[in-house]
Length: 189
Image (tube, rainbow, N blue to C red):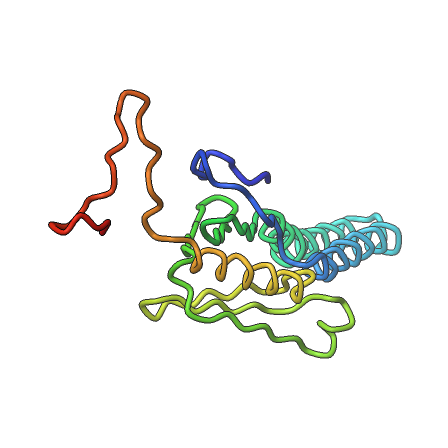
């Protein structure tokens, strides 16, 4: 599933668009291969008489249930999970049928922490925990290149904090610039 661009504002730019690390797809892929292998073995090894056909159907139904619950469903969840970092916020979106999206404005982020297990370090991924104002915590699991993502997030937050809150508007073309106000003694304010 593609991330919908219509959830972004006109001035908002996508800095990072990620999904969980591909390791999340390995185990479901193996489950699909094993269940397919079990179905083939049942088809070849069990006798073709009436009792054998029932056995083949029982194995096929069990393999189908396992394949859907432990193979297809996790792959769909992985494919439909998006971590999007823009210059204004972090968007977390997941869900296959029912969608859930969470927005965290960069200006409201208090802290962000990265953690990696030994296995995560070998794969180059990790978990990023983002703490925002109001006791809201977002956990981004299996983030690929988590070091780079955390550094980019830090740079965006600092840039956002250094940006003046009220940037002066450009004067209109018809508007005449007003000279600096002077106090009673004739000095500029």
